[in-house]
Length: 176
Image 1: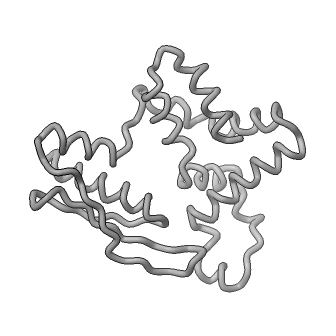
Image 2 (image 1 turned 90 degrees about the vertical axis):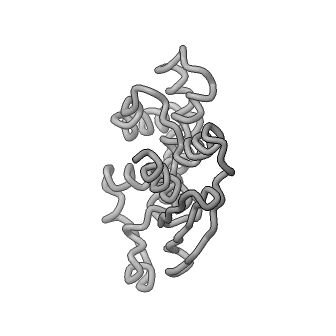
């Protein structure tokens, strides 16, 4: 429901953009962290019912948990009120996020891959160097390296999020 609504909306808002740019915009808007931010913005957190251990582990502030909750709420809203109402909810909740970028954002991992290719370097290699926390609220630390040229680490609540943070950190290093 979320992906369909955002994809349709982006196609309407940016009819001249090529498919790849629209895809990058879509991917930037439906990530777990963005869904979690929307959940916080619409006031979901006080309504969460969590077990003692999940509360103690900080699940109410976990992007993984809040992102999943937001997607579940959208699905429930769709089942209860239908497509049009769910679409209207998504558009209202994501309204200030759709036009944030004048150009389609490039995912940091893609940008790092392109940087390496443009500079005749090896492709970036990612490695999980640490995983901590409970299963419902994990923390990952990932290292990315481009050969022996440079490396950086990033952390996140998923491997993908940690890889993205590491790629972002390495790009900043390389652009200095």
